Image 1 (cartoon, rainbow, N blue to C red):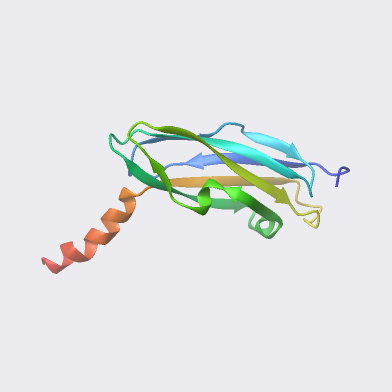
Image 2 (cartoon, rainbow, N blue to C red; image 1 turned 90 degrees about the vertical axis):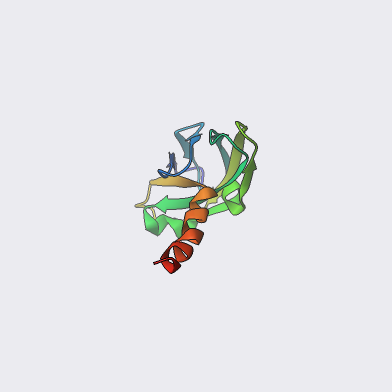
Length: 131
């Protein structure tokens, strides 16, 4: 729909566990529903060792999520990083033209988790069994 313009904002968040550089390369795009677009995120492993990370997406407002379709995304699978490795990772998406007309701004954000966050969860039962 070339008669309609939507703003897509990109955000990145990091949990307190792990040490990463992580941010979108572009803060926002003006897009037309029905066309394929691409954006990139930068990540660098600052943990001091090889590791694996997983990005978890969130789309706001929540009503827009059903109309936002990722065709390729670094969030689809865990990302392996060597010590100090940096990557530029793409996300390709289409916003469905049937997006309600009152929605003219969408935010795509990612929480980027280091694999070590899962280690803590696995240790909890072991720690509890010592008590």
